[in-house]
Length: 473
Ligand code: ADP
Ligand code: MG
Image 1 (cartoon, helix red, strand yellow):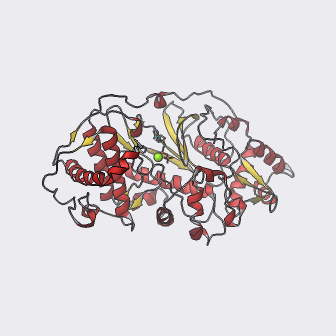
Image 2: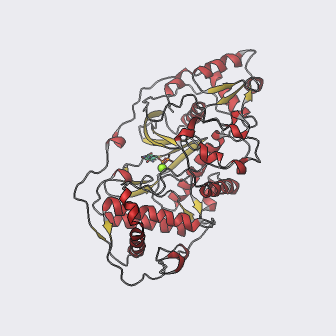
Image 3: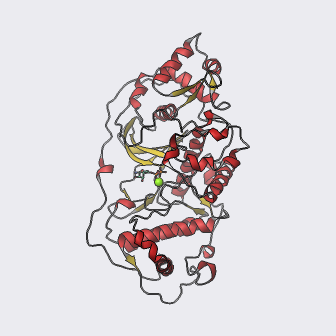
């Protein structure tokens, strides 16, 4: 979905007033009756309808007359409300190019008044994950409706709360700066996703750091659940930063061990394939942290890590992320994982008819969804500040989050012949786990064999300057 913030220049106070009225109406309506929009907006007679036409033209609202004459916000409309609020707060004043795109997010550079470049992540739940959500129908069936914008807001709130709490505990994460609606603003990480990096000076150190982070997270009561080469950033000094937290779960989750093992496995697989990392032949067993028999089969042992569940609860609550939000999300993640969490781009444009309410799927029928790739370079400089939105909440109801792992345990090489060696691989991985945890604990040295060719990521993606045009609206 394109984000053309130039249109912001053309929107008047009344436009935002009506846009906000639609948002407020969506607390109780999937499709907000036109009359209700009019009543909430309180413009003089006929004014609201004229404004709605303009909002429709800019694709900020969607018109639906299947049951009655009504409107709902589009993601673009929601983007504008969030951006305007954050600009009014002085968080940033210009929007630059798109630097990342996930299955369910768009990431842009933004700039503050003094030129500092930050990152804005817009959550877009429902963009791709329709099948996954359909599979949740049982869970959702007690609800008369659900709302993608609300779910995206919850994802953003969770991400912001975790980023902030983790930062306060000195985990290497971007600095959490602000959050509004489905939008999180954070510091820009000068680096590359690990997946882009072909060579490392010290792959063994990087590997140890990463495994150590997973262990430390567990010690703090958390499991990332999507800890792979796409969500690990690395800079020229091979410093690691982890990103992307909406799917994190607590170590008290009943499937915690499985998620923990999966995170560990992703890292092992990636380092083995990309950096040809191998280990000394097995020696004695590592004290304590490695289970050498039984169901753990020699793996880094989740149960032996001293965990303190609830450790971050206070910080999370301070960020406005309630226990109830957390429960809702975890409940949903649970269902998601059990269903395999499959998704399919084909589902993207499908209506979720089986829910019995065509208007539920706000994002799926996003009219402007012509692909996330087209990088839009636009800027805005806001001089005139229309009225602050009356609300930042789309819905009163608490609903479950839709978690999506973008590339679970991504197999970078994609080599089919690897499958033939599954058993051997499993054995090696088990050995490697033992070595790795020992290395993490500083007890043993890893041995690496390095690739001979090198190409350290693609710098270009992070080196650009945000273009600023000082446009007024
Ligand atoms: P998703 O949840 O859609 O996977 P991510 O948070 O993983 O989104 O971000 C997607 C991509 O955007 C990342 O792989 C990275 O390239 C880029 N990105 C995200 N956050 C930052 C940041 N703070 N600094 C620099 N790049 C970032
Ligand atoms: Mg990601």
